[in-house]
Image (tube, rainbow, N blue to C red; front, side, top):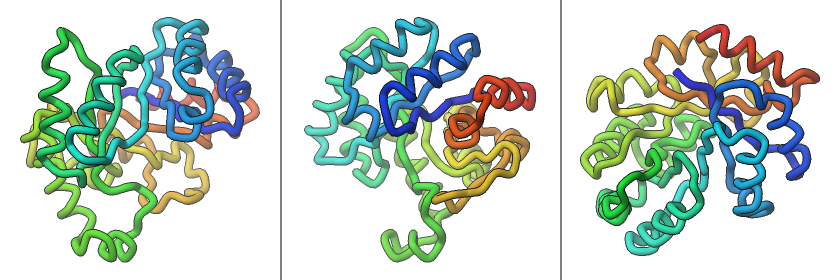
Length: 227
């Protein structure tokens, strides 16, 4: 299991300060929609200047028509990130086109598909997808695997089932991790590190418990100790 720290702070400078605080730890850094729209490719370069060994997860959740998604994925290749994601609900054709486009490259980032956002509860999810979260997440995971992706984004509650119907090598990344029982905030399906470990999660994403701490490096250390 690996730790991915969410860079969700209000300004670029605050994110950079956080990165400097944890620069000696072997973790991934998640650059989300707000940070990337605001700070762009330059921010990715700034991360590598602090520690070139940091791995970057670009969390943009691509969702569009197949050709546009494939074009965007190819553009991401030029950014030097190590992982990015698409929405599984864009469909198998779109996911397959993304992977076919990337197959032209000798090396490529890890590509994951978002199943059900961890902000959804059952009622909200059913209103959109007309299915229970677990069943639909399983279906999306199968679609992603058959389309050639490396894994999915899901909650810790769906991870074990997804591994069972795909393979142990098919990766799961889980947001909504509250390592020490912190408040869930706007997340609905949260879990702690022990639960994620039991669920065979490959990557856990932790944001607020780290960046809202007075000592982010100490929180990172304590989380890694639990691994």
